[in-house]
Length: 586
Image (cartoon, rainbow, N blue to C red; front, side, top):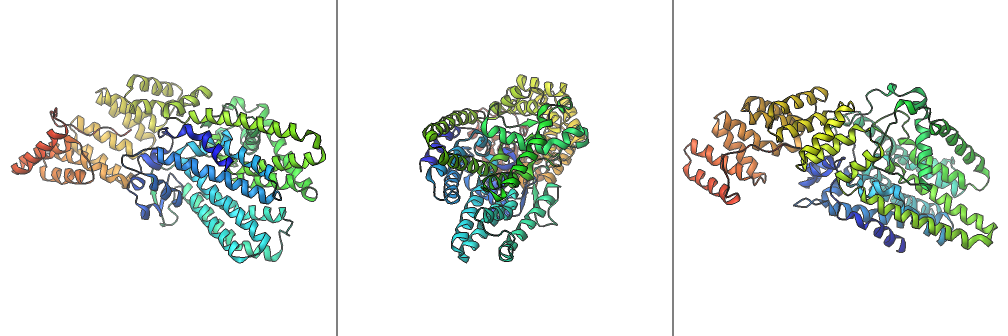
């Protein structure tokens, strides 16, 4: 309980944080399925190119009206604290009930700053949740190895499936089971051991195929529905120097080990280094480090087995994210170390215990050193939590660390624009433009900024450029439709709203209001009333919706209905003047 309490205290500063404009809109802020608690749809939906229905259902359980980030963050912290408790339990079993070993392993896991990304970031619910079931499955499997009771193996299988439903990374669990066999000194390739694991490998293969399909933009042969944007990888990985591409896996492998001991200068986004840094010593030394640790693991197979197990756990659980094929825009990510650190921490703390058995004279000094290291980690975690306070803090940290990251400027600029700080937004977006950014969201943000300034022609030019680069941005079609309405081009607006509906099917309810205004501009008042009815029925309480519906009702002869709508509009906004169009989506 002490470890759990300390972990919660370390993350208490996150409880009042805001959503971050880095996946949070797709997962929660703009996800109608989550906000409407549509659990049935979430079970078959691919969100941001990932199939993790249990994660999405858990997020929906936290959704409230009005939407608040606090329940999501508090839940993440609680699950993480429980994970620290599970690490204690697992290490206690693996170490032969050595309480001090288990305590320090769990404590370092709970308060390590490399885990802040997995906990303080709402969108990484999938990380803490899949690890919860993964660690619980390890514990039940170890108990199965001790007791050989079939219900424990069945419980392990159920927990494994739940872990896969939380995040696809769980597919490595059958190999971890083999590592646990090895640590238990059970023959790994014995027929019975392999037969027991056959169902686990089948499930792992299934979820592996699902992950590959949806990451490539598929819907797994029609089984699922895609929601949100398709996240692309690096357009052309051959643009990276050959040396860099060959060393990427080992670079990540080395970086995560280094940051276990020296977690400094952390941030939420690490872009690929420029080609000029391909010859950096880290890229040259990383393959030697990786091969060296694997050699140590092989050498230890017939000795203590500790290095074999610890390094094996680390390698197996991190292998899938070591950029064997460059994807995405980040060379490494703190969250990838979440589960892999369990193996390294067990190896470290149990290794210290083994050493102290041969050198008891330094026992007190060494454990005090561990305590001081824990204090250092605690302080760093408290500091790192602050960088996730909101989008401004998050992207400013990235810019401080990587001042040539165009994505950071684009993202901070769009956040500032959404906050009404247009001059600052324009400065960031123009900086990204000077850095050579060719992102659709950059031009969407510029379009929004120009639109807010009343420069509609410039806004339309920006939206056109954005859609020419990324033609599947539903939000940009919506925003361009709003701009068309402001220059009275209703037919163009309707065409863009239809494209937006096709690309954002679960946000269709947000399109009724602008469709109503478009029909109103076309003098098709009855169709406008239908759309405005739907908007109001969906929960819209915009006084302009009532005002415009009242005007439409006057044109079709419904004086009573018009009077009621105009009264409601005045009640909602006594200063209401002329009809207005909806606002931009940022």
